[in-house]
Each structure stands twice: as structure tokens, then as C-alpha cells.
Length: 178
Image 1: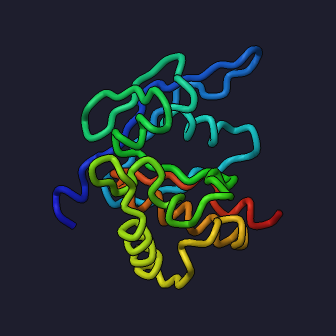
Image 2: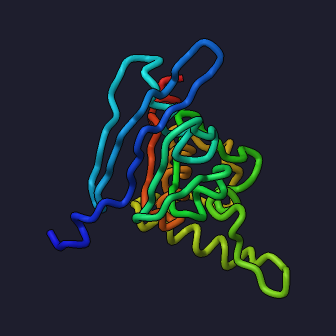
Image 3: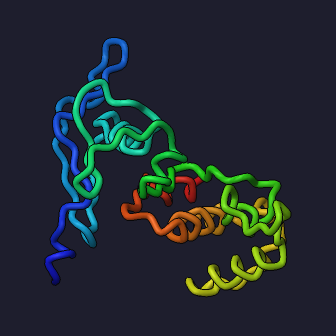
């Protein structure tokens, strides 16, 4: 491993989140190195999803600090967290089921020219992206025409394609049971 691979990329110190009558997070210290894969394990209600939501701007921590690549950050929302470099795939598919696979892969970052959507280019890139992970599907089809498993794969491919510095998977297969 190179020195860069040992570098701490994400860290929290004293992260706390309170809800009425509940300490959801209590002084959480956490660190993640570049290239490291980590699993958070715990019972229901242990605070795993709350930590993820604090890291991704869904919740704002009541106390504590979050660092990304040595810089203090405070994600305002999930879009801001993505801009900072934190990508997330949540338990439930959170894409737009009536829109195409291509639309879902590139929503918010569609290829445009002179303000006009370059649909053919987007569909080509979407096909290439899915193929790069071994999936062959018509990206022009609405997402809801595919199984929940494939919808979750689309969400994961989208998150990976965002070139996130940190990719968080919050039980991405949980919805496959339903």
C-alpha cells in the first residue's frame, strides 16, 4: 500500500445527535482510511442509520465535528454531501421509478449543450456504465419496469459514477426482501 492509501479520508469526533428523549448518537469517534471497507454492526436503534444521515446531511449533528480529507465539513443536505464527495445508497430505492434508467443514473448532471439535454449521449453513457459492471439492459426503459434488485443496482452504479471519495451503503440489499 502507498502512503496515500493509508491516509485518513473521513473522521468524526464527538458526533452527537439528540431527538426528544433519545440520544441517537453519543460522542461518536469514527475514522476511515482511503481504500478501506468498513461495516457498522449493531442492533436496531443502535444509531447506524443516524450516523449515516449525519454524514450525508440528512440530519445535522448537535455536537461534534466531521472531517473529509482533513477539512472540517458540515453537509447541508444530500446534494451538498455529494458535492463534497460523500455518495450514499440508502436501504430503500430512492430513485424516480417513472423515469428511464438513464435519467436516474444522471439526474442532476445530465449532459447538455446550449441548455438542451443531449439524450442520445446520456443513453450511450448510461449503457456503457451499466455494461462496465456486467449489466445489459435498455436504459431507455422506465426504472419501474425492472425488479427491485435491478433498481438497487442502478442506484449503486449511480453512486459509484459520482466519483465519490467515500461511498456509504446503508443496507442496500434490505429492500430486496420485500
